[in-house]
Image 1 (tube, rainbow, N blue to C red):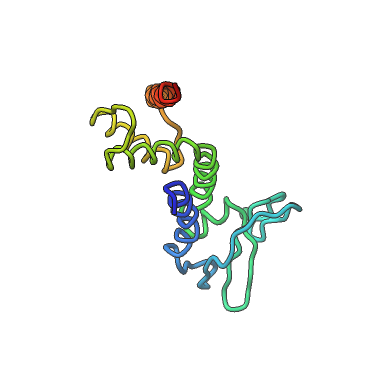
Image 2: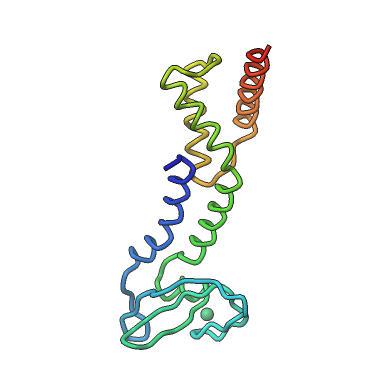
Length: 167
Ligand SMILES: [Zn+2]
């Protein structure tokens, strides 16, 4: 599995994992749990507060009863910030997907550095910086401006190397 796939899987799995950590909760003297989570094309109504329209549904279950709940009410009844946390995590997943090529390039470069097969020179300080950049990208964040600068400087170095190798 590539570094990118690994990071994507980790972020995607953190979604159902969050639901597992909530487990059972009390709502109107009954024990409930979140049984499903999905998005709908056709807007729906929150079955707790009546809010319309909702497009993100958290389904909760208690002995045969199922309620469709919006992302505001789910926070209240579970006493968590799951609605907000999910939203943040989707954004991170989107960001991660956009940074797929950077993740692939940096992880490949670090592997070559480790194996001493990198065709151009890289200092150990730069290597540490690239490791930090990779962590950041894997967490669904963008590179900082200076990190981006370093990234493109090394891309240029790699391109220059390839060009000179062709001659
Ligand atoms: Zn509601």
